[in-house]
Image 1 (cartoon, rainbow, N blue to C red):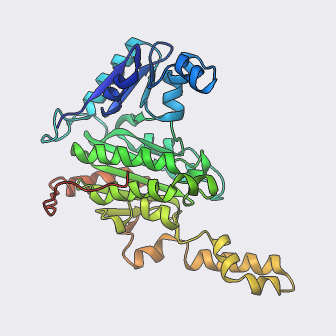
Image 2 (cartoon, one colour; image 1 turned 180 degrees about the vertical axis):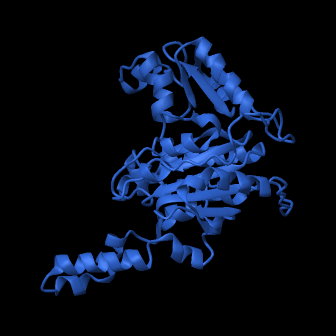
Amino acid sequence: MVPQITANIGPSAGGAVYSPAMTDFVIMVDKLATMFVTGPEVVKTVLGEEVSFDELGGAMSHGKNSGVAHFVAKNEYQCMDIVKMLLSYVPQNSTQEPPVMETGDDPNRLDNNLINIVPENSLQPYDMKEIIHSILDNHLFLEIHELFAQNIIVGFGRLNGRTVGIVANQPMVLAGALDIDSSNKAARFVRFCDCYNIPIITFVDTPGYMPGTQQEHGGIIRHGSKLLYAYCEATVPKITTIIGKAYGGAYIAMGSKNLGTDMNYAWPTAQIAVLGSEAAVKIMNRKEIDSAKDPVALKKQLVDNFTEKFANPYVAASYGTIDTVIDPAETRPALIRALEALANKREKRIPRKHGNINL
């Protein structure tokens, strides 16, 4: 019913750690805060493993590795500043709308440099945070879980004074691919936004789900489904903008029309397909390429043809999975107009005890 924030400024051990773990946000102070179910002495006795308090359950360990800590503060003062910032974005309870603030930033502000952030070569990385900061009011973005699962970005900002939740792939890390940790991180954030009536803005540039035995055996299917479930269940306004790659199941999971998103925009640089052009051509034209006199030239021609014919936003728009292809410079005003149009959105769902997310 109400947002809950934990400020962890000292030791927490045993069953006591589950009190902060159940709250919405956990802030741990570096070098002071610790959290662990069993301490170093028990670990040494049972497993013969020597580990310090900080290595086992310190702020950086939980910020980077476990994801228990949403924020790692340098000291108690910064910890309290983070609490204040969080409270400025969220309502006091689930029946209220998030606070609206006058930011003084022109809702019609354009940024003609946005298109220059995305490289012409789709295999080259870029920092998605540059795009996020540019679009938000006064370029201010409060990132959540900054150190954990960095291949996806989540956090709060404002558009024309209204609080919005941002979910975005980060091409700088793992090329923006979704894995177990990033799916959990984003799903939890989407569900928080839905709890407290915060619209969800999604920026997409992902080549797909992370492949490999480690991910498959670790349960990427089970964990990945949480993100789809979270988007499907959310009834707040949901707006998605596809910046670059949007391939396969990861395209579906990142706020696609299939999951009930209200507005889906795409930049002209968007590539929406089941597979990347090269991978698709390798599968569909393997025999043809192998038997060709000049397989390299044929492959290049087939890849170019596939890209032109399928891997662009206009094909998706013709099928209705994209509402509009927009000029990147106009992203901010387009998102603000969509938010205004969806301000009174209400969805009635079939009464039930609760849904059963794939925990």
